[in-house]
Length: 361
Image 1 (cartoon, one colour):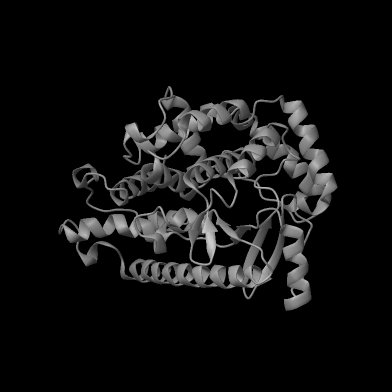
Image 2 (cartoon, helix red, strand yellow; image 1 turned 60 degrees about the vertical axis):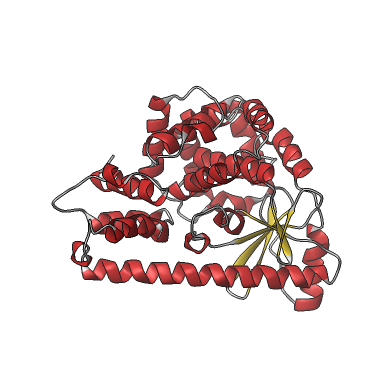
């Protein structure tokens, strides 16, 4: 782990309410590297919340961070706050459009997760992820008929369209069921939790109730970790949601579903990271054996992925790229899925062949 990564984790610990005395004192700090990491992981504004505590206590002065980095950091914070407000307005507008035709809308991931952060406006996001309670196809037809908006159906568990300059992912499945057979039962559980009776009203749309929020975010994070990359923002979403809702969550159900899906070791590892490195209270997480050695490897891969090749944008090379990435991540597959690597490879290949453009995802 680099020095910049260690200091960033200490800053995030402060943002989560940690003790100021735990922050490492240095004669100088690699602020350029630290800021770049915050941008890479989508946590620039949250990291600033941690630094602000140091400023408030007089531990830092304005001259500690170079002016050019301060300017960039300030710009990121302002942009993040503005984008959050725009996202909320766009989500509300889209929900009102659907409601005219009797379709209810739930907002997932980015916006719903932000509501559990200490400062919701400091959670960055890009896409607007929605769930329409089983009316995805009907809603897509409405977009074409009434707004002349084209819908992309080439993805594996959602359709995609542009709302002004925002990408909207309209989920008909919460997770990609075709790529892992262990996802089928988990998806069924998610859909049983995603009902109007259990959804939480929020303006003109809904947000997930705590059980759906933690189960969906956990599996979503695990799938990112096993296939592409899991960032610190994924981890922090989990930690803040657990902190806020731990007494409302049916942990017996969550642990059983996670165990059946094969990701109990992954869940234990991320809990250990949250406790050891980010200062979250051990008592808010389920009582699982904490494998700190595995946790350290998971965290290191988040900060500096072991597999760092990039796709080329050409079909055949990207198929080979997918295979190399899958093979390099075999250890990840083992802590996220309860299925053989051979079966996983065959299912994923079949899933991609059904939607060839997904080779570039």
